[in-house]
Each structure stands twice: as C-alpha cells, then as structure tokens.
Length: 192
Image 1: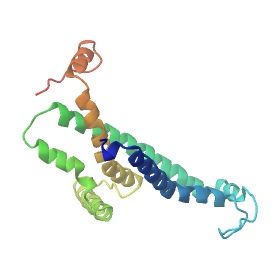
Image 2 (image 1 turned 45 degrees about the vertical axis):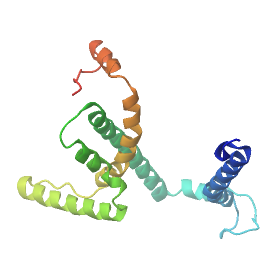
Image 3 (image 1 turned 180 degrees about the horizontal axis):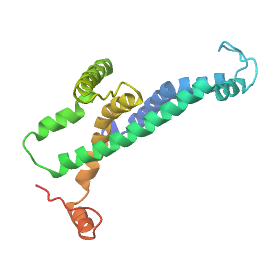
Image 4 (image 1 turned 135 degrees about the vertical axis):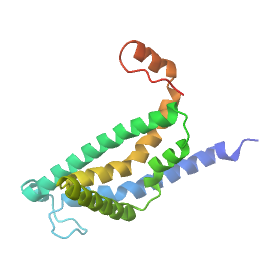
C-alpha cells in the first residue's frame, strides 16, 4: 500500500495547484505588459493596436527618470546595508554564545512582526528626536532625506538577510574560518 502523499494523483494535484498559484501570481504582470503596448489610452479589451508610445513618454519624462534613479539608489544602498548588517548579525548569532542572545535575535527579527506603518512613524519620530538632539548639542541638522528612506528599507530587509545567512553559516565549518585566518584572509575571532 503506497502512501497517499507520494502517490501519482497527489503529485499531479500538487503540480496543478502550483500551476494555478503561479498563474494567479504572474497573470497580472503579463496583462500589464500586454496593455503597455496597447494604443488605447484606457486599458481595455479588445486591444486597439501596437505602440511603444508609452515607453517613449516614460523615457522622455525627466521627473520619472529621476525617481527611477532615486529608487535604484535606495534599492542598491539598502540591499548592501541589509546584507552587511545581516552578515554581522548572523556571525554573532551563529558563532557566539552570550547572555541576551535570544533578545538580540528577537531585536534583529522584530521588523518581521511590526507593521510597516508603525515602523515608518516610529522611524520618523526617532529621526525628529535625533535631529532635535543634534541641533541642540552640535548645531547639526540631519533631516529626513533619502538617507532616512535607505535606513528604513535596510532595517525592514535586515531580518530576511539574517534568515537567509544564518542557515548557510551554520553549514560552514569553523575550520574554514580558521584556515582563512591563518592564511591572512580574515582576522581570527575565537568562537565562544
């Protein structure tokens, strides 16, 4: 008697479910791409004709291009920051045993459970408070510019980087780190 979960019918059903799920997720994107080449101003079927006019208008609009560049800067900077901080946090979580380790892990992973609206308002309040302190103490104004957006995105992305890096670091032997340290590639930090 074969197990129901490994039977051919279950496998076919699972593949069918996966196909429906992928169609549900990607069908709006496919429709959006189709309508982006439609000649009509209002997206509706039947399609009126083929045009690249909308792409030309996008590429000739300086405000849209500036916002695209700004988004690319935010994405690259926040991704680099999240991966760098995630790697440091992952090394601490995997290679160190210390009091408060679980509290540290909860702090690093807390953006997963905090609603983004609450996080955004909290970040704004924090930046306003830091600005008030810096202006009073040093006469320096930091403000809420693009750097604040990068910080917010990096903090929101940090738990995902940690959740990807921790299992990978657990599979890497400490002896590889020791060999790299002896070869002069990385400083040796003894595991505790």
